[in-house]
Image (cartoon, rainbow, N blue to C red; front, side, top):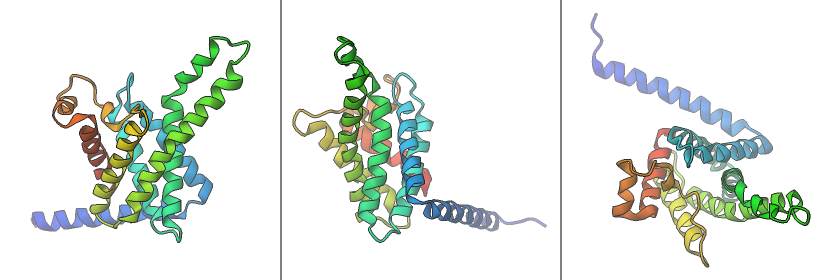
Length: 212
């Protein structure tokens, strides 16, 4: 007997929905520190999306994990604080691995500074910049839903806080999401039309969409 396409499509959607439920249940059951550790690891992996690696799919995977962690955070009693924490740990992993080279500046006079100051200074900078990811995630969860709209909320919220990071005081627009595209590729050329922040918004939207 031939099976109609609508029947196959419906069955496939049911399988996907069941698998999604299992994933969300697993993330929701994680204790606090494993959630933070997973966010830290996801942030570190997101750095591989940037030069010299340009592993865009790894960046996408990291954002998907972050979305699932925020799904779990949205179910907590103090959801905004939980979302901020997840975003901060993600940002800490992202900026620590992406800005490690700053510690090299302290090696100019290594006898006086060296690792004693270089490593703490890098961690302090990463921790400060991670606040913007924390704020972005908290803002997103304030408008969180259980459907596709949460992806748009995430992309827009993090876009806003990334713009603030790049413009407050003198700004520090390093490791913006839009930089994951290899320079010269067709997608990277969109920056000439929408700017790097517009490209970052598009990148966040595309990277988060598979999490639905």
